[in-house]
Length: 188
Image (cartoon, rainbow, N blue to C red; front, top):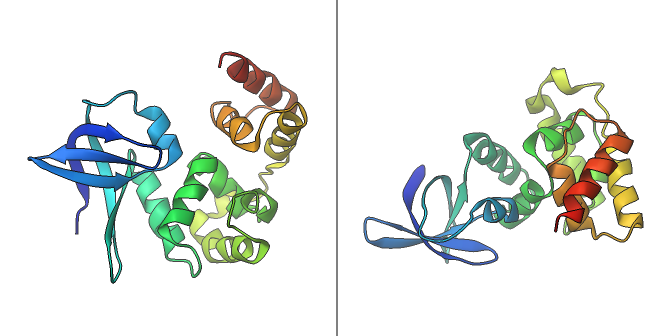
């Protein structure tokens, strides 16, 4: 129904923004990743949107890139995955990394998300593996998981480690990923 919305951000909270478009303020739920990319209020932005209709509410979800919206819509079509869970999934890694995890059947990567158990992770893999394409087969996320565990063992929280690893090149080996992530975490 509402495919995109362009307006000025007048309020930014931890889970949503208020976007004013043509004199109307729209509450747009966004992922933590999107929130971190938004520098300040009073900025004009374009969001690709999904309107989620329930009996008691109309919720608007916004994304900066169209592929994020498409991946979100694939996730919410899976039984047991609602919009909030889909946003949490999108918040842990880049779409490319998530597609690798799904394409290679790495359910352990998905179960690290709060609220996603082993059965739900397996359901995600089963339902989306074919949609991810065959070009991802053979790619392993072992380096990513090893880097995440190494950063956690150094005292960083899982969220801090994931945020840093999102900014690191996905082509790097484990040691390079850890070094680059530590540089990013050291700047904070």
